[in-house]
Length: 495
Image (cartoon, rainbow, N blue to C red; front, side, top):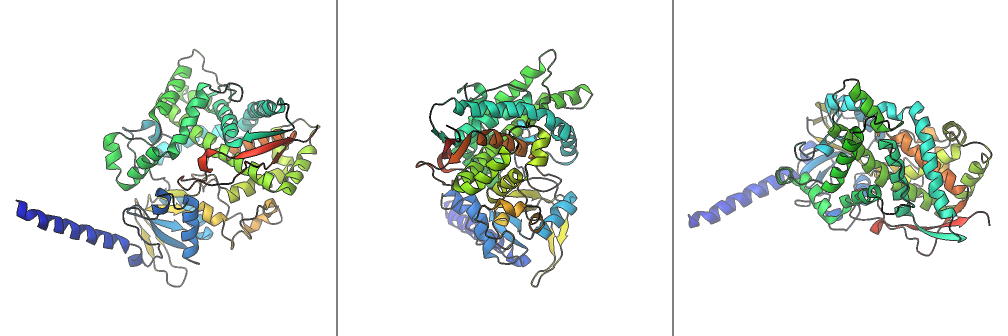
């Protein structure tokens, strides 16, 4: 037998080489521009080894292919089509959304039910049903109800700093914003009253911090293993998010459901409980899955958004002064949902420009759910047939930083979203993804950020201090601060 080992090894090597060559020409055979295939890593090589960030990788590839409407890339050994042209993106993912109505998910429900049952991952009728159950939570009427709870939380947050005797306060903004967004999302999802600024080690905050585990080396390894060979982590029962974290949310939902009258005000859980009582097939796991998802997006993503906006205001004091002037115009009026929505246009512009420059997600993905053909429109293109299961990516960060779409993209310019100019860019602005799978909580997220800054800027200016460093992590899939910290100062406006 031993004499056959070299021959078998040689055959395996030849086969592997053939497969690699075949794969490396996947896009060229389809006449699609692409980057170089790094063996086993694809375009993730730089990020895996800390050479470049996910955002910089997308921007580099986007710029390398010139005026192409789309290009091919690789995530590990799997080919992914990246859409670049805003018109093509809208045509495919909005107008022909039935062909792309799913996100990629390689985890098995038996291994990770809490992840596989959330709105982001669900597909087909299950997704449609859950979306319809959750939509009333984010309608205008309920947002007005949620507004009052958010305002109370925001005022408590600002009061915490206002009680400090210093004229200028050094604040580690990421931790502070994690606390306030966690308090708000606890109120919105479960109707739970938490004050993480004063109760520093409460169990919601302790558990919420574990969401940061998704950027740890171990969690990144699990995530990459799902992308490379999902059968292995599924067989081993590996999950991206901490099992204690998921158990906590499951226990919280079951505790609330066990109460005689689990009235949770205008919270998401109240709506799901109502649907269950009306005969809908919604289980405790389904409810916990949605709570888990909105904690994931509502704490980590929104806290980062607040930090980016605070940094830009500190970096651009004229913008901050103009925003404060707008806020001061309405100091004598009672702060209401309608006031924020209808009478503070510059606040809306500042938030939009923050989301343009620092989108909460660097990309969005889709899986082909029905065969689709991209017809040629430019010289050199041929009909590109997409089959069920193929992967599509939209590089939001690269589109938002394209100088042909956004003039001087590295400059923070809220006026690009003024009524006179917004028509030039609205088709290219996609910070919350695209219909019909656009982030369902978009308006709530924007509302809480606006309320926090209104309350904060009534009392403080946000300023840079010696400890302020704007460093972006090279190993995170989203825009995250290196080390998970950003230091800024709060300087009292009135002595």
